[in-house]
Length: 255
Image 1 (cartoon, rainbow, N blue to C red):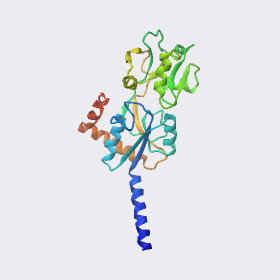
Image 2 (cartoon, rainbow, N blue to C red; image 1 turned 30 degrees about the vertical axis):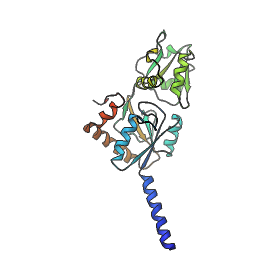
Image 3 (cartoon, helix red, strand yellow; image 1 turned 90 degrees about the vertical axis):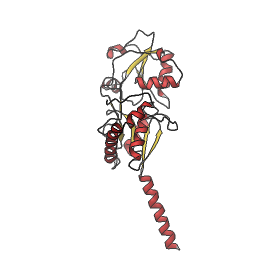
Image 4 (cartoon, helix red, strand yellow; image 1 turned 60 degrees about the vertical axis):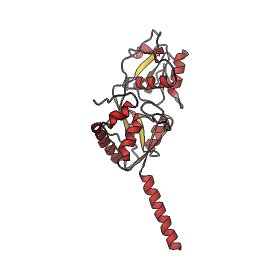
């Protein structure tokens, strides 16, 4: 009996380890329409892409949201397998697929009656503008953050974009940086008129590609990246990518 019990326990543990091995943990902050509420039927188009690709290989995607700075640290250390919605500058040293799973543009946004616009660093004299802590916005803004420019206010927390919107509405900030897709999506969710803000800069994102990037601490990351690259090609050919993007009112950036 003892031998049978031991054998049964070993088999149970083996099955548990195999089941765990087929789960890929992905994390992001809430950044709709790229990554949204994990409990929603619209969890974000990047999550839907990942689930569609990896389920064909027998994997389940475990997706949840947390603070962005924490996401980057925990995926880098290997606590989680992948970060969703990252630019190359966000994830230096990570395993990055060749094929992007999204596209990025960023602009400064100010209230519609504002006289301010961003041309260069000199435009920031004597004002305050907002960004989200540990986001990458493009080389120009990232370099200003790195040198701790006194006009740039960094916010964090569970709803950082909401804070930026509120701080700009109340005059605590003259403007903030955001992707128009994300701003539009969130203004609709907040039931606010998006026309209260206007675009007041050129596109600040010099590298347009966004990725699901994999942990440098996980020996399977290269395999995951390859699966995602091949899966993206299949989704495009089959029309499934277009179907996913249409659920979010988007079109394929790759043509």
